[in-house]
Image (tube, rainbow, N blue to C red; front, side, top):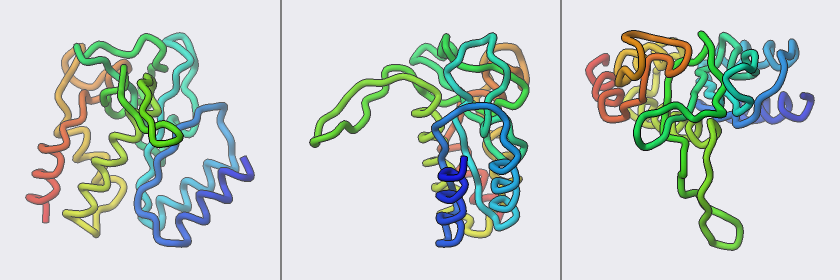
Length: 177
């Protein structure tokens, strides 16, 4: 925890506007305080919901109120079977069989909520490019309102608000000026 908090504080002190967190574990008061402080400085935190399965309790930092929790879906818009579910999940992004960079200039294929969280972090960066004054709560609202609904109608504990739609989110951020 100490190292995670130190890294988060370091990034915030150097002006980071979006932080992507691809780890999951139990609740931690020190990390929660650091995330609240980061949000207070306008940092938008995105985290992987976790890959501990549908019976897992909510994992942190994704379940922290200061974080945008992201789950993963496959190319057919089905949830990643190993994804953690819960009311804290805000949105879904592709996270099954994703091509990623690998050591020594190579590529690999991976699956998980971590790659989905990285994609949503990229969308948040696009939002910040359009609206440099974007607040964390505005980013949450834009992502949720522009998501493509999956599963039961409306927000649900499996897909959250639905599949992130980068084009619609950027358009909404541009209109909100």
